[in-house]
Amino acid sequence: MRVLVIGSGAREHALCVALRADPAVTALACAPGNAGTAAVAEPHPVEGADPAAVAALATRWSADLVVVGPEAPLVAGVADAVRDAGVACFGPSAQAAQIEGSKAFAKHVMTAAGVPTAQAWAVGTEAELRTALDEVAALNAPGSPYVVKDDGLAAGKGVVVTPDRDAALAHGLAVLADGHAVLVEEYLDGPEVSLFAVTDGTTVLPLLPAQDHKRRDDGDAGPNTGGMGAYAPLPWAPSGLVDEVLARVLQPTVDELARRGEPFSGLLYAGLALTSRGVRVVEFNARFGDPETEVVLPLLRTPLAGLLHAAATGTLADHPPLEWSGGVAVVVVVAAPGYPESPRTGSPITGADAEGVLHAGTRPAADGSVHSAGGRVLAVTAVGADLADARRVAYERVAGIGLEGAHWRTDIGLAALEGRITV
Image (tube, rainbow, N blue to C red):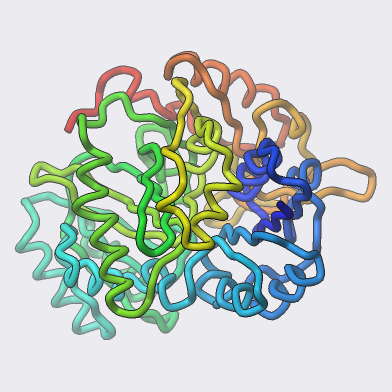
């Protein structure tokens, strides 16, 4: 099978590593890729969010399967263009990808499907924003944070969760000034969980739950980011959690999108809060999450190419049950100085070719060295017998990275290891 991966981050590097390990994959390409993917997949310069360009590359390269990594190409219709060109594609249509591209659309789908989620107010003016903040303050428990989201794509950084009403208002006004609608939501208490599901629009196969660390600094302090690390599986997750989410969240959502004539085929990501009132959906994404992909895929024993191809061709019901290793995986993101507000790029990196190091924002230099090219630069992974072992190895590998001014959290998975997470 000839597989073409679209994207240039650590998620795509993780996908390429897993696909390269599949004996069914005879050729692998990544477009545009980065300095790390080039070691395992053919690089091809292409604008990932250009449907015509991606479809042309897939045809020219004789791809049997295209795997779209990031959200922007999906919302732009890349999967539609690839399928129209006669090539199987893992990724939802532009219509179905609105489950991530518009949070208001996602709320409508969840309401129709009876999926439990936070109460929300969609606003388009300053007056509506101020009213919504007043209403959510009355609904929330005293002292609870305000949750204010950009309704559109924001690469995981369009949400502010703060007890400061002025800060919540300022974020909402900034989003409105950018021409986007705003979603104000009630605050959901309890730990958050990321659960991926592979689907062909009918059958839904959930993967292992993981937990992301969104805040930049230790102790969940600092600004929101695209993710500073993750671990899987979750030792504190309630028994039966995956089955419950499949029955109450994932399958009803897939069924509702099919009922609307917008079938979702690809990777449906449910961001969940395990609240005092039960499971609630925080958000949906239309693709593999980053950095959770970097800890879920290393634990998957089932060959990845066949799984994704079955979803892309509507044959997932015939796929064998998924098999998992018994280990634990941890990923620690190494970020550039100044991330997320104004990351410094162009700095040389050493140690980026070490075991377990996945490239996120990197580029190769003419002399063969590797330089930083984004805010999240590397995703350093490790698999261990247990969480303590995986954490130890991951941080040993982080210590081998050389990047001036680099920043990373030192507490990825620590709360779980110390038994400080309760449901």
